[in-house]
Length: 468
Image (cartoon, rainbow, N blue to C red):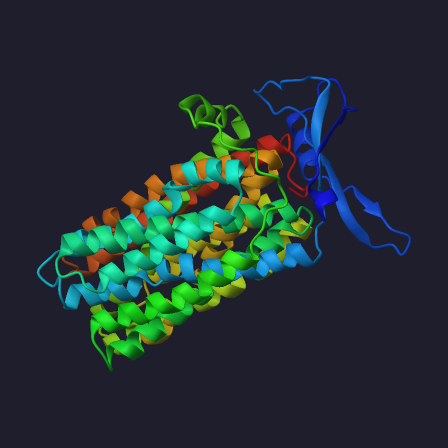
């Protein structure tokens, strides 16, 4: 397999001035070395200079052989699945903690204040990618996942002995999610280096690990909180996460050779915004992610406001994440067939419409359960396909930096989105407060979807019925 990781310089053979659409097709080329039996073993992918960038040597470009399968590739998928199970899956259980803290140790604080724990978790998970993506390109995944494992488990164990809001904020909302971020970004970037034709499907499988975690951890927390203390419940979850991340430490590898340490400067970060397609995709995704996690944080509180028993309402978090498992795998499979941008837009618009047409009038157990199942599916589609769309317009040797930068920008949306929703809800004592928050979520997602439509049309040179 060492030969698969080897890169070499060759003469470029391409049109003198390819259009942006031709470039995007070249990036998503499915040219393969076909064996005698008709199967495809590997893809040979070339990377011409991107729009707005200058190659250091105009006569050459790096060629990387992407196997699109094989033992090491699928072992990485398995390890990344367990990595996201423990890293992102833990954060997906935020709705359980939002409601628990409101009724227990932080009952004197407002919903908006408590929601900073949830929003900071998402923020540090995503924003840290701005730096972790560069570290991945420099060193590969092994050191990042090892450090992330230690930091996340340490943060959770410290949360188990925290007594005040400030202590919980530091340990659960800052230390642990920064550790999660190292594992999350290293796993996603590593997986992307092994696959091209199947990338959306494979990333869907990997990211579904976070949904499985979001399904399992609320059940575990509810079960143990009924039989033991809050502290021992957190510690037990910490041991589960440690065992999952140990698998990721052993299994996850990158198909790229690390470039070695180079300082991360602002000019390096700014260069990622030289590509206009990347800028528009990032802006549209910013509006989408401003609202996408609010239902995960507030669906339990909304259900209890409408008279549903809190024990039953807690299961809505599991329903959201359970349906999200299918929403991350099935659309990923369809995206490889019909286009990643196309399926990304389907997920965005359906999520926004569900917030407006179903969540606003939903007040009964059946209605909220239906909303949770459908929204979880399409929100899972959005979370899965966003990095796939970014990878599609990126040089594979810069995937870590490019996807990490996009996650870093989106992190600010997640930082402000949940507290904004909490500020709209205020004390949550009136129906209008909840309705306004749901309107905010739906409108933000639809606005983001319109911007992504523009990005897709520009990339396809205004062509509608094309796979992109």
